[in-house]
Length: 172
Image (cartoon, one colour):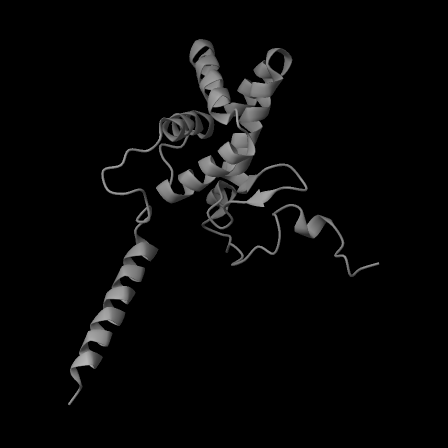
């Protein structure tokens, strides 16, 4: 016969496990408090990201991580997003490479923003070397086109595209 306090411990452990399972399988389960609206900057960034990538939507938790990383790396990020969105609206929606080419001569800062946003989504990287931060790895969009034939490595030892292009410090 079990003691009463053991039943309480079992209920606690089962409740914790159930919560962990929910958090694993429900994208965005860890979000702002219920009913809290996403910041306007995040919504504008997601609208721009949809235009640039052609994707209808993004995982909410990953989207917040990408937005936070890019915002923290550039204090003018929200203003640049608004300016690029306005430029796209007045020049018609075109693929990101065409936008970049068109912006290169007149507004190189906005052209660079296109690359920054696409790099964050597709490579999962934010920042410039040596301060590159990995914000997504197995959920980076670069793996989507080959997801039916490629097993994504389960870990990333360093920033993708950097780790395997340089000799380790121990190699002389």
